[in-house]
Image (cartoon, rainbow, N blue to C red; front, side, top):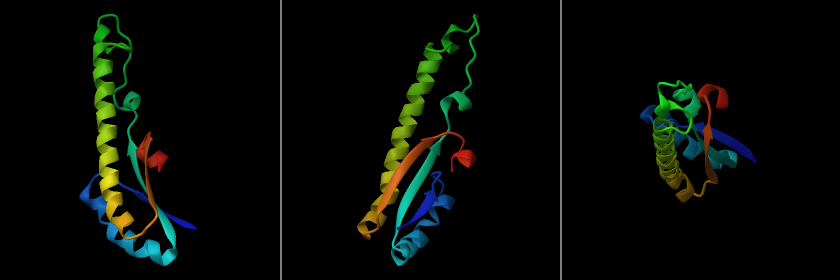
Length: 108
């Protein structure tokens, strides 16, 4: 079975491929994998320990808030991917979706 990988970043531009995927997947008897890459919070918000910034230290208030924000973003991305997968599933296409953590260009 063939696989069509569809990287989605939440933009309208990335979603423009979905109608083509909906046509192509059945013709190729392919399954579809929707992929969204979430930037690693350590890369997006690098934190170094500074004695005068205890809130920014690992486990500090700022670090905990950023991690909570990152977790919330992952939940939103999961809902987004599920919504993008729904029409494909309704059309009888085998589809799954994944959220990966890293730098998008390297991860894809």
